[in-house]
Image 1 (tube, rainbow over the protein chains, first blue to last red):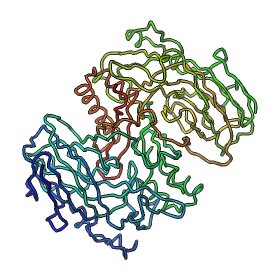
Image 2 (image 1 turned 45 degrees about the vertical axis):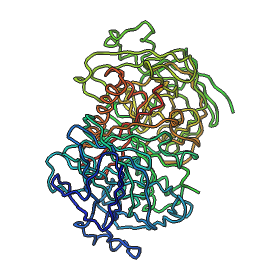
Image 3 (image 1 turned 180 degrees about the vertical axis):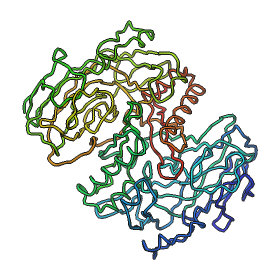
Image 4 (image 1 turned 135 degrees about the vertical axis):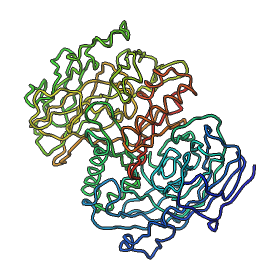
Length: 312
Length: 312
């Protein structure tokens, strides 16, 4: 078993493409450590303000490390990516940009940004009386689909990519369907914390140093990502407290999600004294969307679950 | 604080209606124990077979206990229903009826039924090598919305009702918006187990004896149900094991849910040796749907999470 390092100086790429030149070729079972910049490719510094957000150059977002060529991976197989370790930088950031996220732009009309100190233990301060567990993962880990050329990074696809799944923390294995020989794994857009749904579109964005073991599962024939979590709770860091959940009951799951989040924002403002912006951001960073009922036609129910443990 | 009992002999009702005559009038803080028949109102016995399912008389489904009139509850308030205890019967049942549930009728063309012994501890046998924790709750707890008359029970609404939320187990408090004076709480359709989503439309249906404390929260101004869970994990009975999750990545949350469930069925058949019918039913009884990402336009991701702990 060999170990490989992809440093921050290595070439990055910003598209899915089966013809991308690999930055490293590995054998199944090898371990790779990859350094990645944040989602914005370093455009946001600790001196940035909300006024800088509309000026983000979207041509520079999603610089991915990779691709990693895994010898012997063939279509029909899955690449299994076991996340072994994450090394965090000193700080991260999250924001609200009107027009992005679950709620329409008319409900949040001003850009908003917040910085987080990631050096003070395993939690980060969010607001007075609110602390969030640090639970890092890569928002983007993926492989190009069959025949993909010059496809932009953001929308997730069958080969994974920008799936923003909070459960891909240390110890978890992500399975992705191999569409091209060598599979061509890339990663980036790390988050220091995020809830299920990522409703305000931003987790806590940060650079990251990710260590993972890549193997090949023969003939798994996946049509989309799958994952295996190690023994233990899915939300171990907040399970000591209770939960408050709001719901949306609507004839559309997207509208039900919106209603649940709006109700949680109202609750956090009224009962926890947060600003509306902080409430929406907290839903994105620590709230979990669950489809509690999807069959009692014509109305479905989605719940937004907020752990009490984030309130100190 | 008074205690009240609504026995199985009390009148039941099968519609939401603000003019229903209460079966009991209580003060806020009182405790009520309500006996309910199962969803089908006793039409299914232990001698029933799958052939009986198409003959279910849908005029007899959802016999609800209540309504309970809570003195002093006014529009704008919420009724808080704390579930104190559930007493289970000896058996329950679940089924697949083509045309109902998340997957289209063409994918499951035959009715299927399964019975469960609820007397052998805190788990029930599902299939060889598969046991499910018993975690009872009422699939239906609700109040009529403003002006509701003669509205059939099944679709959930802003006043709750058939919300089928697995998290309403012992110790949880459900908050429902009061639309009519006295609020008129009704309940029924108990489940001995169910996953988030209830994808095959059936939990483990059973009769139940539910004990709950009803109070009034002034001016909560809810637009839909909310709930508070006591300290502790949301899935305490299965957290000792790991999880396997399949996903659906689609431009529609409903289709993403379907894709995730189809992938889990394929996995359970291939890796756990279940029949397709048992796999679908297990998704409904023990799998949890999570909206892991709902903002990376145009594709959203839904995960179907199955706990390893159900496999013995």
